[in-house]
Length: 86
Image (cartoon, rainbow, N blue to C red; front, side):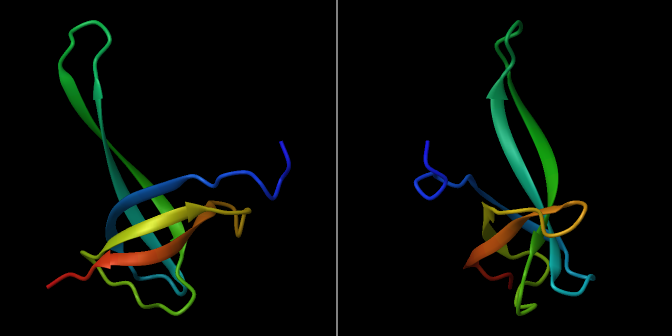
């Protein structure tokens, strides 16, 4: 598959930390069904995302997009802010 034609992964989550410069920590909650017990389980994973203009604040709901590695742990960019915190 051509590199330009590749669809980038997108995730939605909530900003839990904005203390770093141009970086936010986004918590993404995922709901899946347990293979054996058939109950629905919620898991959370935290991603470091690049926020170029430092516009995100804690509690904001954001859309993050996969990108090239920007640092050791940062492989996502904030695409847009879906909902600002009160």
